Image (cartoon, rainbow, N blue to C red; front, side, top):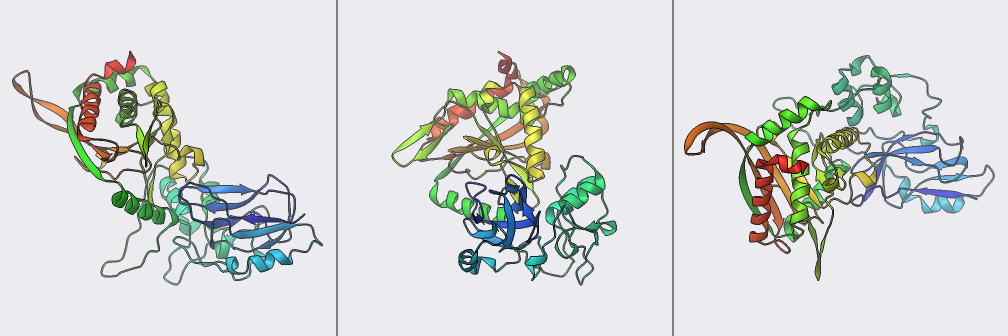
Length: 410
């Protein structure tokens, strides 16, 4: 029986997807459960498995093309099976579009190349001499110090893709974020990537629909610095201040359910668990992987899980359940030297915490001026469910916990 393959909904905010790579070409036999195609959503790059076994009879959206959710992208059927009804339904969907970071698709999708049968093709370059490579491939190459000029690409028209770079460099972390330059005195139009489009829509909705207000406190970080140093002398992993902040927020949220909540028109839903989302910057946008049930986890476990989530986020390998369902978000710009800023609430959450840099400066302690370390934190709140006094009490409690971190071990 013929099976129509449609563009799946890979995230709660996804409206369209981009075809990164077909693993099979038209005419190939495909088994149920085999990876059929790699798709870029607004949050991650995902592998879509074949629903049924059969022959890949038709590809409607070639590599580099995009399609809306539910749009047909291919048909799997038996060799002599009539698929004419699927062809007529997918006429409009087969028109590809150029998207950020992707080449125009091959005009003949019937010769889409299979990753399992592909011969090496010299890396193609555009007319200005720029190597053709996907954004993800460029990020990985930069992280691993791989020279793209010396590589061969297996993507459409010789484009270098992620698997090419990984094959050339072997396994390793991809934690750096790189940004493309522009020649002095020139301009360029940069189409929005799927993730950037989603950010644009959601942030406008947040600022238009959610009445924001902001509360800032300054915390004495000397106790937290000492606490972190002690933790790092007894464990193998290097604990970060973000790890400690996640635990501090989770503990504080359990005592302030009004902040750990979401607006629901006629009610508010309060959560008896802390699913903490942590903002991670990518070259083309921002993702917020979620650490679940942080109130039940120790700092070492939070450290381990967060490292894995950040690496998968930067490799665009997050699964849907790893970036959905947060109840509270932390956004930390301290590593960039930013001392204070205000973040935009990440709906449907009720609040987000903006974390600044730890600053060394003169402070007054016990009536004496000494050199201390402080950090400013700003809570952005949804005023429909969180009032000023509620936010102030939460921030006061969070400050006390941060300045007495040993209480996290009780």
